[in-house]
Image (tube, rainbow, N blue to C red; front, side, top):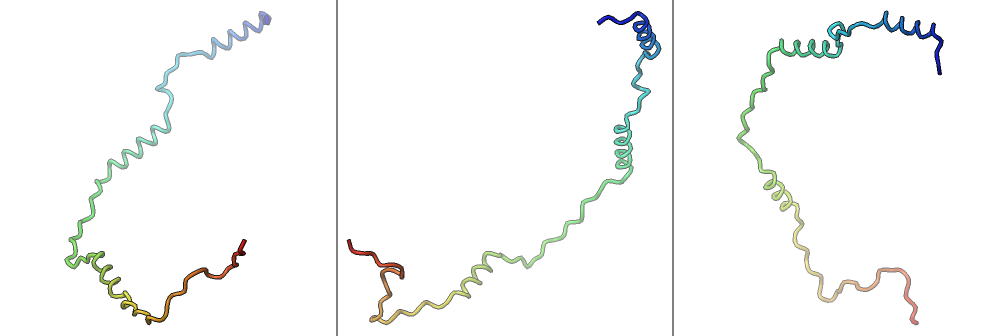
Amino acid sequence: MKLPPEMMKLAQHIIQTKSADFDPAMLEDHYRSALVRILRKKQAKPPAQAPPVKPSRENVVNLMDALRRSVAAERPAKPTRRSSGAKPATGRRGGRYRRAD
């Protein structure tokens, strides 16, 4: 596609008037400025101190020993034996009977 000569002159004129040397120092980086501002505020504060260490208590309880004593205290007495005449029920528990084939 060929452009008319007056359009070419107009395009060249726009390019010549709008072109200039680029200087990045003229632009401000807003993100960097905000970050520097936050970091300077942090630097102005005194450093945080660790909380004082509390001394350990002397009456430390071993939880496993306490659990074993608790379980041993709650164990039921040994079950008594059944009389020699009674036998536990064996076999099936309910349900259908099988047919003999």
